[in-house]
Length: 265
Image (cartoon, rainbow, N blue to C red; front, side):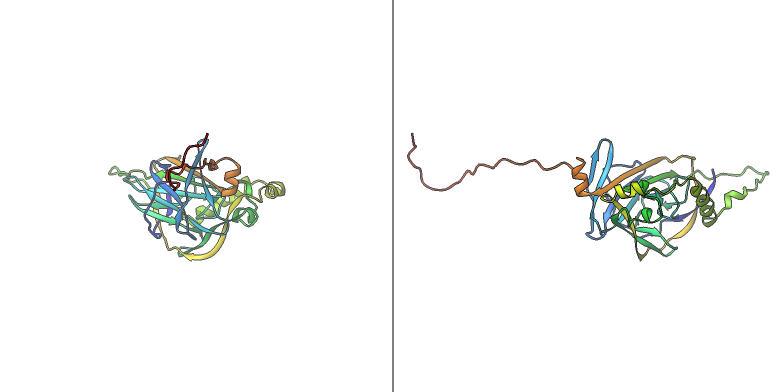
């Protein structure tokens, strides 16, 4: 497995609430940073949904439930939240230590800050503004276990391959080149049709310091991928994902008051 120069999740810690036990290794929830409330999760036809409020800032909350370190590759609207590349599971992400929680509150701009996530229209979303509106409305987290340390057998000393030392910046440039080949051409029609849907904007800079660490994946494929779809409450109601409240019959009053009257005929 290649050794990956990833970002250690030295981010603001937070108490974690499970997202309906969506992940076996990592719990995921979505926090509305404007209201301070975690968004309620709705299950519909095997998928998970949350309802966002247009204009509100939000964060993806992660909590490592496993006994070892994990790498979490975070995708928002089909875009890697760390690098801005069209997302692929093989890319860089955030490393969480056992029992660590982290708040991913924006697009990574430097080692010190991020551009805040906020719910907005598809046209104003970061994916829409960078000609990638096809996957707006979904958050994905690919989780990798860490490989066991490799113990060299004396007296043979194997030199590590050059690619094992590729830094995050160099790796990002290579992946961006690949993504630019695979990226579909801009199509205005889907963007116009999707205007009523929600996307994620590129907001103001907020402090979110982090640092680099090395991580060697235990396998080429993620141990799990957790997917959360989001949209406005009105759209989720219209689609039948959020059940509409049923009208309740009027309740009988056990004490309507008054004295006992003679019964009528």
